[in-house]
Length: 378
Image (tube, rainbow, N blue to C red; front, side, top):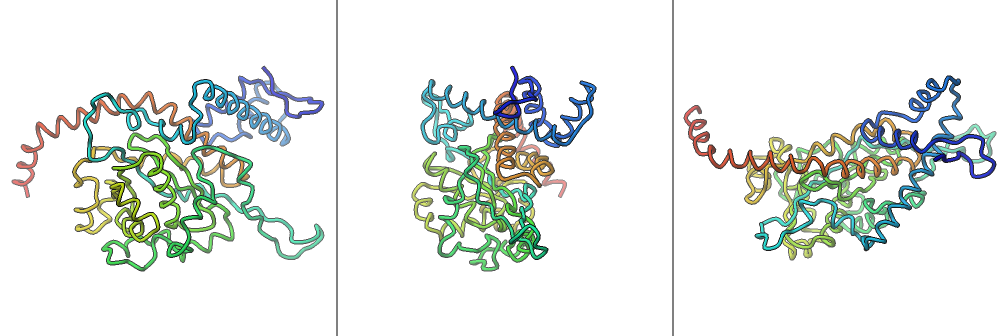
């Protein structure tokens, strides 16, 4: 099939196979730009490249992705999988499906959340006044998020409901430690250190939550701010709504977030649902030793061997292609990347679980012997 580049009297069309190839290849290699791909097509057809061809291909790609979304929605309706938050509640086969007579565990579900400040978007500036005006430029604020909808994305209105009271305008890294032993160790994303970049970027990153097996749960844009507590609170609230009690949430500053959550409007509900704030094993050595004993995944009973930092680092490859994109195309690229990653991750889960099972058996059988040997070597 062909998809035209204009709805009226089209003169150029792109084949569905070419669009599908680019869409799939880009998920595996986010560095692949539309311009590079279109130049490749021009070379194959022996025609000169012009800038407008990239724009034509981008238009056809948007139409193609819209068709895929429309067809996917029809399939979900036919399968009765279109209820609110259905995708969130069924995103990971290992986490969200329970077997008959399956024994209960301390944590019904484990997830990790963190901010990715690589996924920034440069602010669009327009002339403040007439086109002939040589004066200052005015910033076009990010207000067109409604042109792109995806169920994994939290709306800015929902996130901002957790910015009231104590959380308003406060970074989760503020100096008020509330007796937390690690409060002074996290300085890279304080608002005082990041506010200078807000004149350059509209979105200063993306806040992402993934399950223990690497499936994306939720995404929220960090808008002209550092890693404020409202993003983690919004994600935690949504997951409590979807999955209920006995959740464990890993966060690089999980000890600090535990204090923030307890003092927020969500605190009482989190306590009643037995929510546990944890520190990912990857970040363990940056925390105070007493903090590690209480919060680090390595020492908390009931935790497994997983650490999901790879899911966040892999998404850094999206940065070059989204830095100067529109709000629509930035969100589209991020959502499509994680959606494709989730679809392909299914094939790796079986091997992932098998390797962890073998590792766990090895620790149980050889752990005591290894511990005694290491203690003798000290």
